[in-house]
Amino acid sequence: MTIPADRVFVLPGDEIPASLIPSHPKRALKLGPGLRHVPPSELIPTVAGQLVTDRKKNSIWVESNGGRYVPAVGDLVICNVQRSGPDYYYVTITDYSSNAILPQLAFEMATKKTRPQLNHGALVYARVSLANRHMDPELECVSPTTGKADGLGPMIGGMLYEISLGMARRLLMRKSLEEGKVAVLEELGSAGLAFETAVGRNGKLWVNSDSVKTVLIVGRAVRETDENKLSVEQQKKLVRKLIKEMS
Image (cartoon, rainbow, N blue to C red; front, side, top):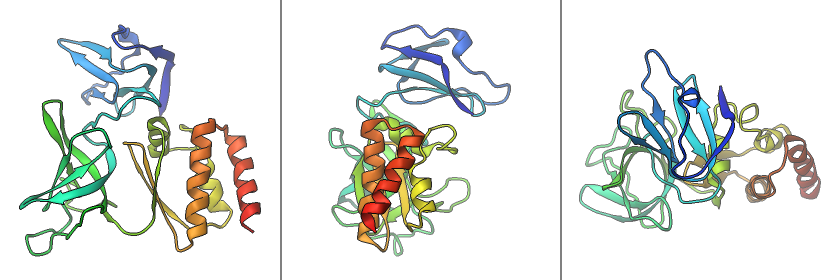
């Protein structure tokens, strides 16, 4: 279960007590966004926010709505193709960072003949496979263990929305309602709207549907929830209002 570390809020450079750092007999500690490891065993926050741990995954990070997205290995991101080279696509993860690279063969069943042909502006759902402060990030659209896409790859149609980094992480939680307190997508689905979404840890939400009106309502509902910090009950009320306006 993902839990706040005793509701501890940290500032850059603060000392994190050892009692708040999860430990696991078989798993290595996984550092998420907002933390830096100082050998041999010190963790230093790099951003201001709430310290959060997932003891099951033996991971710890700093939850922050503000600041810039810093790529971390394993993050799911929505990127924008800028140009193509002989072996790589050069893509942007954020508007303020240098290009990331996406190997043209890093797609399911991709060969030099079958690799996807992506033009400038194409959206791709990818996973960060390499993140190093001294190198451009590298992405992949295939599982290194199964060779399957697992939902990653080029994104056709739909609309892209900007959301906060905190909302992106909440939406990506396995139990977004119980752990992230985000009920808006589930409520919209229960109201009969048919749509699909993809969430990028880099603060992106992609929404697709056969109905343009549905795409607009879903995007509006998530952004209002994010910007106004709505509670679960307020989200349900918002959905009822939007459905009424739609009918």
